[in-house]
Length: 225
Image (cartoon, rainbow, N blue to C red; front, top):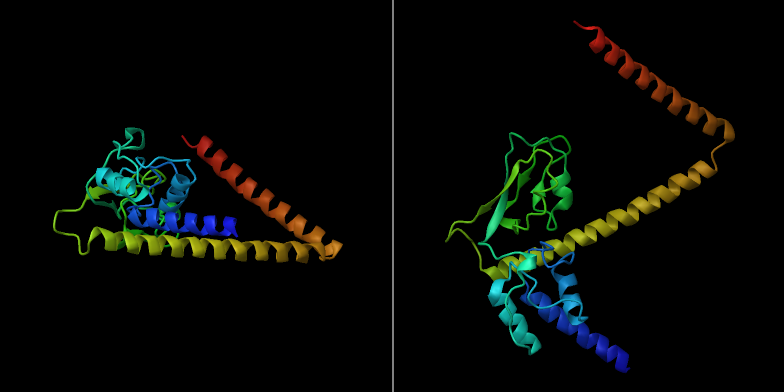
């Protein structure tokens, strides 16, 4: 009974801390998102001054919530910056989808080998999509004063919702992929020996033919004056 009550109190405190955080999901705090950071604070594994986007005001709110003294931002985690979003140079984008995979709030849309673009109203400026881009075609731009359509708390609430929706989607996809892989594995276990051998031969033959083509192209280039 006591353990359950403590668990409930901890969850309530985690919720309260998470509500104060800016929800950029930028991982600068050293954790995979704002809620994991809140959980780490409650567990005594993180301090209140590890969130650059929250800046000194965020630290003050956390200190008041937890009944502790405020402290300066730990610069090892970065520095505050003005509200920002990222922009993709669509002329250079090759559609590799690495930026889509790295966005914690699904604020990037596009298809493989097709141009990608940012949903500016949903972008948190976390910068996680910049490093994976092989074309170096994503840049961070500051939002002009007065251009924000909603208040910081409203933006944080929207980002939190999108973050949770993405987590649910990924969990669903992982579950579906596991089931598909298990089904394929069972199908192959019951596959007749003759069919299994035939399938292996086809795979090997295809690989050999591809290798011959690559070798022929390489020899052609070498023989060219």
